[in-house]
Amino acid sequence: MKTLIAITTCLLTLTGCQESEEQRLLTPANAAKKSIAERYKDPDPDPDAVLFKDVKLDWQQKHIYGQMNAKSGYGGYTGYESFRAELKGAGIQTTVASMWTIRNRLNQIDDDHAADRITATEAAKARLATIFEAQCDDADNSKKPVDLPTAA
Image 1 (tube, rainbow, N blue to C red):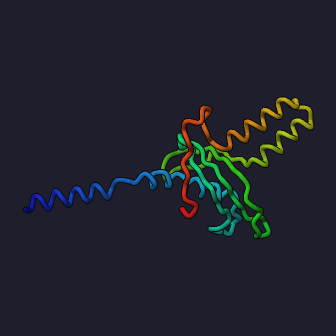
Image 2 (image 1 turned 90 degrees about the vertical axis):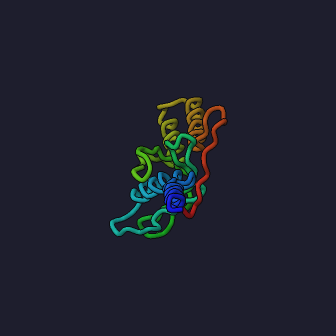
């Protein structure tokens, strides 16, 4: 009987130690969102300096994208805009290597075209590539990104 109790206790303990699939995905996503928010915070830390919605992790878990709404220097929110960030590290050690918003990337393409650094055809291709990249899909659309809960 003692052996049965000991085995049951061990199995329950081991089962509790396994990380759920959702938690395994939320850990790097939350670390990435924290890293993004730190880029927008002023010296007085505000936990709501950046709000996120429709956040997704690409199928390789190397990019995160969605909508973000950051506070301006005046304390008001600027409005939701699409972002994409490249991740480095794993788990709770995940940080953002680089990040861009679609609006900033498209503005840069328009500026390059206006300054004759790229042709109209190159600008059109770059715009399409930006929109495609922002969705974090693979080329044949066989691997879908993972939706993450907003209130994570």
